[in-house]
Amino acid sequence: MEFLTVKEASVLWDISERRIINLLLANRIPGAFKTGRRWNIPRNTSKPLDKRTRFSKEEMSRKVIAIAGINSEIGKELTKILLEKGYFVIGFYQKDSAIDKVLVDEDIRLIPVDYFNRESLLDAVRSIKMDIFGFVFMEIYFELEDSLAFDYDKFENSYKVNVFAANVFVRELVKRMNFESSIVIVSSIEAYRGSFGASAYASAQAAKVNLVQTFANIYTEMYGIRINSLVAGWIGGVMESDDSFNKAKEQIPMKRLGFPEEIADDIYLMLTRHKYMNGSSLVSDGGYLSFDEQSKTEDLDSGKFYRILDKFFKETKAGSHMWIISTMMENEWNEDPAERKFIQSNFDAVNRGVKMERIFVFSKKNIPYYKTNKYIQMYLASNKIITKYVDRDVLEDQYPQLLKIIKEGWIGIDDYALLVDLPSDGTSRGYVTMNKQEIHKAKKCFEEIQKIAIPLKEIMK
Image (cartoon, rainbow, N blue to C red; front, side):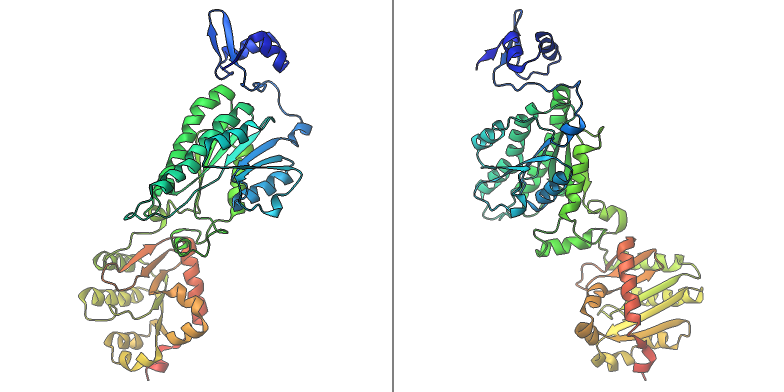
């Protein structure tokens, strides 16, 4: 390796020798070392940016932000924001992949790279001679795994792209940054949850989160930069038709996937705001990671579920409103002791002054069978419980969207709680949620079904 003297560096960088000595003493020139009284400065080291100078308004309009993974949905949305704000964008993308036409712009420089090849990455980042205001790494490699026929090459490829490439980009681009610069590494909630079918991807995401903390220790002191991680949840726009994504919605308190533009906006704020945030992770997942602890019990077996039902019915005060959908599952309305106790708790609640409305949902062909059910006859005989009926076949034919919300039925208590039935498969009986969005969705469904429901006594004549 060739080295410069302080005098040679002064001429090359056009700054005073005294300033260079101060930079050396502050450990701000990577790779430099002292031999006796002589300083040795690596020739390929970039000129350190001046912490004493802030950008002018004119310079602000031409600040450069580099993005690895620019042709992802989030990358395109972030680029749109940056161009609107006046930034110049350098975008890295996997060579031979298609580039969206929205990325063809005079204020965007696109650089193809091979994310699986270190030399390709090094050549790409070293070709940049501009000072960098910000860098975002959001390139991902994801492959489902077969545990019985494990592919070690795919596992290693996941680390090459998700971790090794991020390491190269940060370590090289940070040389072109200063104290106003910011780096954001995009990770995934898989870092905290693990994965059944993608161990490489999940563990790589965890590695990125830790790498961010490590980089903060190293480069904040050296260059004054900030580096943080954006931990993204389930994001639509790319794989929204995938069944696993649709199932995930049920575990997200916001009851939807995130939008790419929402994550892009979070990244922009992390780049340009949050000035005291460093070495940290911002989770943007709609509440997915906190869902179980915050708003929903685990799926409960019959014993636990009936105990919770009993507790809620006993503690619901006079004047409260219970709005209930009964789909007449096989384990409902039978001679099971727990079921009989639950039915009695219904009548105890209305006698205490609770307003109760129950809509029965079953096929019209089953009316003769339910006419002989003594518990339904008890409801019919009560003048304190409003009981109505909707033909399940009509819902399937004309209102399938409502049937998807009803599922196996539920008990709503004011706007406070929803006690949800699960399929009678012998393992779980139900769960309890206090998630406001899930409760609101069920209540709106109940109100819609009210419009087509008829009094139960009319079909039981």
